[in-house]
Structure formats: C-alpha cells, structure tokens
Length: 636
Figure (cartoon, rainbow, N blue to C red):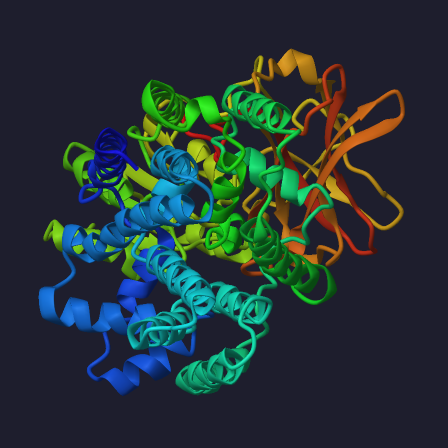
C-alpha cells in the first residue's frame, strides 16, 4: 500500500469519526433519558452492591455487567446525564473504528470505510450508541472479540498464535457474556464458527479457552435463573410477522425509500460488475452464519414461546451486514478519487436523511421525560390556581429525577391513571379539589384517550398542548363555555325532548328527564350521524359518554360506539358500566374512546347503551364527540 493510499484512508476514517462524534455528542447531555435509561438509573440507588444485584438486576432481563458498571459510575460521579452517557458514546465511536478495521482485513479498505460511514450516520446506530444501556458496550466487545477471532485465524495459518491473542480473545468474549443476552448469543455463535478454521493442534487450546469463557460467564446463570422467577423472557411484545425481517431492514435504513433504493442499486451494480470474478470468501460465510444464528434464535423463540425479537436484538450483527453489503463495492470505488467520492456521498446521503427525514436533532425517537418535566414546571407558573398535575408514567421516579434536577415539584400531582376504575376515582378526586386548571401529560405508557374527554368536559379550554414522539402534555382550564359543543364534532342527547323519558324523584339528584332501562329493553336511545359530518382529519378519536344511576345496573351493560357501512361493522368500541362504578346509589359516568381505524370514510357512527342483563336503572346525558389528536408514534 503506497503512502497516498494510507493518507487517504486516514483522512477518510478521521472524517467518518468526526461526523459520528457530531451526531452522537450533539446535544446528548440535554436530550431526555429514555424509559430504559431511567429505569437503570433508579435501580442503582441501593445502599450496597449486593442489594443492587438483588433489587436492580434480578428484576431486569439483562446480564449484570452494565447495571454493575452504572452502580459504580453513579456512586463515583453522580447522576449527571452528560457523564452518565459519555462512556457509552465512546464505545459507539470505538465500534465505528473497529468496523473500519475489520472490513479492511476481511474484504478491502473500501468495505470498512463505507460500512463505518453508514454506521456513523444512521439513526438506528446513533441512538443505540448514545443510550446508557448495554447496546454500545455490547457491540464494542462483540467487534473486539471478532477482531481477536480474526487474529486467531490468521496466526493459526502462520503456525504461531501469540499469547496476547489468546488472552484478548478470551477476555473480550467473556465480557460479551455479561453485557446483553444477545451479545452472549453472538459470542456463542462466533465461538462455534471458530471450529471451522481452527484445525489440528490448535483445537484443544481453542476448546480450552471456550471452557474458560463459559466458567467466567457462570455467575450470569444464577442471575438468569433469578430473573426467570419473575416471568419468562419477553411476553410484552407481539409475535413477529413473517415480514418482520423486511420491516427491520426498512426501519434501520431510516425508513427512507430513497436511501434504500440507492443502496440496492449500488449493491446490484457492484455484484453485476464483478460477477465474472467472484469476491466471496470465508468471511462472507461467517457473516451469514452469525446473522442467521442470532436472527433464527430470536425469531424462533418469539414464535414458539414468548416474543423477544426487536430491532435492537440484531444491533450486534448489524455492522457485519453493512460490511457484507459493501464488500461488493466495484474496484473503481475502492481507492483514490472514487473512494473519496462514495464515502462523502454516504455521509451526506445518510446524514441528511437522519437530520431531515428522521428529524434527529429535533427530538429523540422515544418517549421523553425531561421535556414533560420542563413543560410542567413552566406551565405551572401562570396556570390559574389552584392547579393539579396528572402524569401517566410507568414509574413516578422517572419524572421525579428531572423535578429534583430543577429543585422543583408540582404542589399536587397524581400519577398513572389507566383503568376505568382509576379514571373514575381520579375524576372524583379532581371534582373534590375543584382546581381552576389541570396539566395532564403522558410518556412511553398506555394513555387513555377517555381522560382527554373527561378533562375537557370540566375544564373546556385547552390552552397549551405539545406532542412528542410517544408522549404528550396538555393544560386545561376552567371556562364558562360548555364542552362538547353541539355541532360539527359533537352530539349530546339529554332526553329532555324524549317523550318516553321519565322524571326521577328529587332524592335521586337527577335534573330533568332520564331514560328508564328495564328488563326487556335491550338498547337505549341511539345517537347517530355520518362520520364525515364530524370532519375527521387524520388521526382522530371517537368518544361516547353517558351518565347512569348505578343502584341496579347490570354488570354486563355496555356503552358502545360503532362505525357501520352498508351493514358492515368497520369499528366497535365498548366499556362495561360496572367498571366505572365507584359507589352504588349515586349518579356516575362512563366513557369509551377509540381511534378511528383507516377505511371508515363514508361510515355511520352510532353511540348507545346495550342493556344486556336484567334489572332496572336510569340513563342520562348520552354524548358522542370526535377530537383530532397527534399521532403518538411519529415525530411531529
């Protein structure tokens, strides 16, 4: 290799690492922690290491390595976001360097440079290189063990394997087993594939190092058994579709057809140009085996037992796929001006896609917590008093981390209302407090759309509203206005115009007429309108609400909202009235909300109560409304 070629490579890898650092460092200290990061951080707050293992590792489904590191790191340097994430970003940059070095050894310098360039600018690889979770260190040690694995291969061919190679191989493989269960899977696959090239007198030593690696990994077996006592792996994900792998490739390449199409054209052009001179070597076989081993295990387990496969599962083999892809780069682009051109194009194309298409610098691609805490603090300043804050998060400690950082906390805060009973009790509490304003936010959690309806009924003006990816926060305040307003997006039936409605005795605290539901009367009055008359605008939510006197409500009476078209049921949502019952003998309310599915244009909307059981009870104030909402799984 001449000096000019070496200099070009050094300049290009320097450029790649600079771009990778810009995307990973800016502005990671200010970006909100993710749910998983905050969970790990909270689980470091134990007085001793042994208590941290029992309380912070046994409850998680990851090996103890990263959690143990975080325990030591936070006890030494505190919980500052910049310092907490710094080691993980450095591992991500180290992985970018190792991708380049491995590609140069396995195939050619262009493969290593182009794979490193693509890895440096894709949102998928950037995010998992930033998070203070097992992904970045897991990938780094997977690649490092692959580097030593390559040394074993080359040195065995030369007839002498150095001691430092054996030590590096053994230790890097052992570290993989303590970081993530799929970095462990990668290490197992790599070790097995090594038997295809380690031959003769080297095999006993190779097998012995494998035994040492297993012995060093044994502490994780005890931890894994303890983790299984809390439930099997997975279970909270859906079973993967047959097209899962196509979705994976689509999403890891920024879900950008322009980027994907460009890469496909480059790949097949390179393959076609070199079809008469096959470039396939034993490292292509290694990549195929390592990928299929990891994917096959995760996909098979997800189908046969519990779903565990996610896009992050294949993060540890993803760089090898990039190397495989760019190994077919034509000779004209492997050096000189051609190489410089394609590296710059990859950096520009991928970088622009991540910055603009994925809106990377605008907000993270996960539910945020810092932003919700900030908005809560700022909006509380000028909110009409008294004010109440309602926050729906998996663990209140996650938001409390940011409240503590700001040395401020809401005066009255209520956490995690989700079920019908919790919502009913929440509204009873809010009615008793009689606040002038309510701030409601949710992130990375189930968010009952019913709550928006209930809040708007009592606090009609929503004067602040901001959506993020998988998160939203709104402020509601009192007004003389009434919501929902009869009109284009809401219908209300109070039974005052119903000749069959009846007056209840004053002791029942009813105002005006109500509908008497008795045995044999299967359906209530029906609110009905064309869906198009409600002016749906994209991601819209239908709400149906009623008030009922619960002294004798059948437990299976249902509040129903449906969309029908030409005798076909396009959508159906229902809520059991008894789920909303707090105290019998009182007027109460029930609500059901549902997102309008695609393909309902031209349908007819109906809201009614289905009186399935026997008994006598009373119904009042049936309402139907449509409210537009931000799509919660897309960056606004």
